[in-house]
Length: 114
Image (cartoon, rainbow, N blue to C red):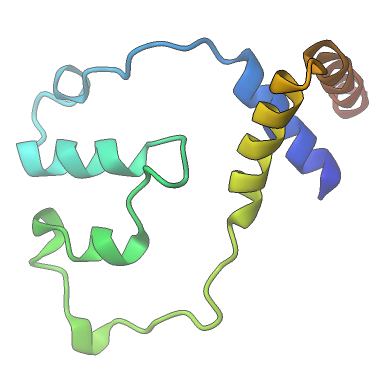
């Protein structure tokens, strides 16, 4: 689990910051409702991403949505590690340990690639 968290942190650090792709151009045949929902599902930040429950209630999926025939997962999946990863990146950056963190990333990458 710890290697997964470090790997995710490394991924977050190395991907370049850029504007999201224009989904209307990528999927010109898709409806505006579909493109909006896809955009909400593809958010990297966990707090900005649409939840499964909200996605099922989205107008695009309304013809498939049947509240009487949709089981609820108990216990709910725990994705809190995503928030922990983002907090770890911020904490290390603010504390001046960014270089040490990059070294950890390289070590993890070398382990994974071997």
